[in-house]
Image (cartoon, rainbow, N blue to C red; front, side, top):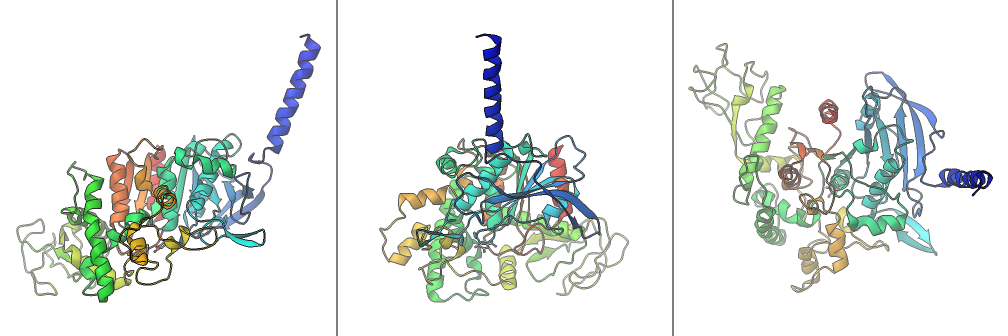
Length: 510
Ligand code: DHB
């Protein structure tokens, strides 16, 4: 080939590459932004470039939800590799539009820290479109998760043009959004989602993430009912006020839980196997840790909710006059003053406050939790048709594209249809399986995120404590970097204690 022909060929190839780059619908356009800002609670104005309304798949089914927004702070963090916070606002397993950053949650804080923020929308149980004159539900499981995975892929596909590192994506969500975050963390690159992602026109690249931040994840849905009854069964005859039919369902569900707990073969940090027999002791350790931290931060702990307070003369606080509200002995502080009783007035000032709480009657504590917010009635999640007909958020998300809610456990299906032989069909079993992060951790089915921050409030009763604790433990057992806590006095909520979260993020980046 002479030089002239070669150069013509190169020009043609070059031009077609250029056109491809410009017309590739998944290519990020760094020029297309608006300048925006938010005012933080401390009055600081944080300025950023806003890239909004970007479609992250090529076969868009639902244009209301399948878009993402990207926010790039004017002052990028002075670190060599800038992370990207991917915050989902999924709640109740419903659809969620791509939102703007908020000064009061992790998105605003991330921008202030100089991190890039991505807020994807995603389909959910209530997203609908009209197709051929019919209403089609677009967001039944696993579609919401697929959307979020497609958003991760979009960031990675455009890594060279989007500021921030797609190898440092931190996903963040609360409740059903916490579940989504846990799934993003657990299911990276799994082939089990591949055919769907291809069909949607997601970018052809990896979808594993660096870290998952999960606030009160409502997950492990196919075991959540038994885990709820097994834990809270101690309140059935008391504060929960169940009737006979509910009591029967509760007992049956609870009876199925030990086998599940034992099957997990979880280990505590000393390598001891956790079984149904010692599980409550294991859980107790985390609640005590929570209360110890709260005491160190100056909280008052009521002495009526199950904690045992230090009362021993030979202990670190020494001897002296004692009596507490219940007339029991009360320790004396290091300076010789008698410690005030808890829940009344000032906290005692001494060095080792945590020595005050030494043990916990866990059933009493669970009764306290149940007295703060009434518990869900059994079955707590797959409830449709068992005692009441109303579908739960979970029944809806496992429904079909006509908007018919569905059962997602054999237990509830059997009870609804009054047939001991009926079972979920294979399609449903598969859908439920790919919506459960527990199925991926410790297997070779996916690339599990190396870093996890998991929180579930110490008085959050939306799901059993077993759900986040099993998740965290399974991850720890798989060698992941897991920061897990049950923050004291927190109900069902997320993106709190942002100092703690952003310290963790910063340490994780080191
Ligand atoms: C949410 C809360 C629930 O109790 C539940 O069952 C599902 C979702 C939520 O807040 O997202």
